[in-house]
View (tube, rainbow, N blue to C red):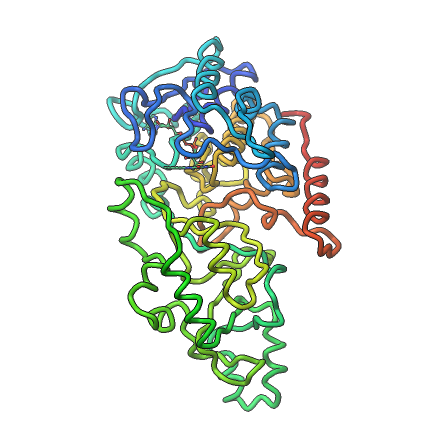
Length: 457
Ligand SMILES: Cc1cc2nc3c(=O)[nH]c(=O)nc-3n(C[C@H](O)[C@H](O)[C@H](O)COP(=O)(O)OP(=O)(O)OC[C@H]3O[C@@H](n4cnc5c(N)ncnc54)[C@H](O)[C@@H]3O)c2cc1C
């Protein structure tokens, strides 16, 4: 066995991982392809480059990302510590001076005697994963813009089908925020079948369908046309040049589909066929469907609503759908270049590859989404890589913590797996129903912080 751990990729996850390993007294070889080669979004030669917004989101623990940061502070995350040191005024959010942030992370890792920095692209010139993973522990943290050659190696490693190159995800909504006086349960044709089967009281049948996989939101003509009108005029996110070529091959954003004609959505994702609105007894003019998104049944995703609208616009326009007026969006829809593996099939809760236990993945490539989320997976993967190196028992973080819930989410079977950011919907529900969101989230956050175990790491 090699007497060091290899980390590939010196971004947010890889830098955190290198620090955590060195802190535990183990040598690290950290491979970063910059400045020899840059992804289309990177331009700074330092480690831990922040490629877009300089915000690490809210610092409040009643915000899921704020809670995750607090957990990371308790776990001695280097990158969150440096983010705190390089913060710029941004109200309740933790925004950083990106240049200083990257500079300080690079300085900290460069002066660490346990860390050897190698500026080379993995997947080229004799640097291949299959050669080093036989007798050494490796963490792959090459991010959403992993270089093409190395992406091919990862595809081979994960069985070809396991690698996705872009993200086309629909928004995800918290079930308890849907107005069930308007929405109704059931799969398409369920009610018609119930009628055909001569079920005496089909309203009763609809009741029986509760907790089915789909929640349906009926619209009348005026509501539908008003919605389409707002949708086609909403503001979209400008894609990078490199993304424009690739993104739309697989699926079309709902706003583009809507621009093809007023009725296009009624013949597509908002098709009302097979439904009867229990309130009217008639087929609605259009129906938006929400599909159950997790085992607990507290998250639902908007079927066919992959979108490129700005987040604020998603909230404004999608909340116009009757029943979603007060919807809590746990995750907004995105369509962007994003290399990620099919983690539910491939990884366990320690980010360890099931097929080859010497390999860990960390960062956005695992399907966690966001700066802080990437740091958190780097921390979990590296703690466990050290445990493996020392032949010690693995560390699985409690599912009541945000760091543990994220690890659980990416490693739990999910046929429609899409990357996920920190949100309260992935935490187990409280034993009691609390309507007030702030009170509920405060309780959940306190439970998370009580369950962070900082011993034996
Ligand atoms: C364009 C874009 C904008 C984003 N904007 C935001 C945002 O505003 N807010 C947010 O929270 N998240 C954002 N994300 C998502 C995500 O949080 C960031 O990409 C984050 O940096 C991911 O961390 P990471 O460590 O997984 O990857 P990265 O930080 O990208 O690090 C990966 C590192 O690996 C290196 N690398 C790649 N291939 C190789 C190779 N073959 N050999 C050696 N090194 C290699 C890269 O040069 C890079 O330094 C964005 C992502 C993209 C692509």
